[in-house]
Image: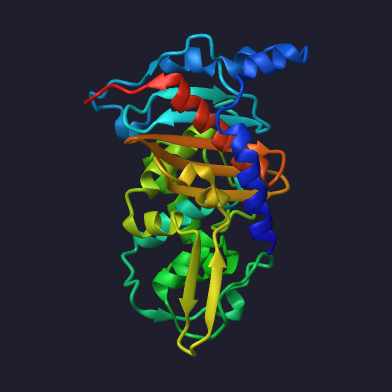
Length: 323
């Protein structure tokens, strides 16, 4: 019920915020000094670093068609919008600020788990010792479950216990698993990123909005992850016959940003008190895909409103070349 209520609130807010008034105009009207760092990203960040995976692709970036539009006001401490094809930054706010990322961590955990080449069709059990100490546990203990569904519980419902079960089932110790997460981060060029635990409960799991787009791009290379990152609700039947319904923590999947010509192609939420409300998402509109990351938003709805506002502003302000 709570998830549905929040989803309804998001729908209502999205009607107003999807194509927002320019951020610089709002701040000017309120008498707030316009920060170069926070709103000029759309003008100056076209020179910013590109995604590593896209850096060698001769793909022209989108062109800014509204030169008077500087961006949108966001509640997030840091935010970024990057064109997925060219890797060029279209908007940025505090892009190099290193912050806790909460459960966005689970994207890296899933990648490391999948790189152990597990057979996702096999059965495995969630054990009481997998309990992470907090968070919703969606699957029943000691009840055989397809390994694929344990992965789904981790990514769709952000289930900490399911995530710790994946660590155990990988055959690696917890320390070895986290070490592989940090090694993978370096391989992806995430040099300011650090992981201390697989579930995202540690405030020492940190990154920047820019580097999290590298993680999102890598996650999209795994079809199993893409499937779960775009699933609004997962139904899991365990060996006993008991069925668990797992709603996605990503309310954008039920928003205007996932309807009509707009499609959510990936995403993961995150929250711990030290991180605030976080979101990494990929959005496609008319064949043009962008990555949006917001860290440290004010509340659970603000992170989604920020993402929708940034998407609306980006597609309104930039034109993509015909290839």
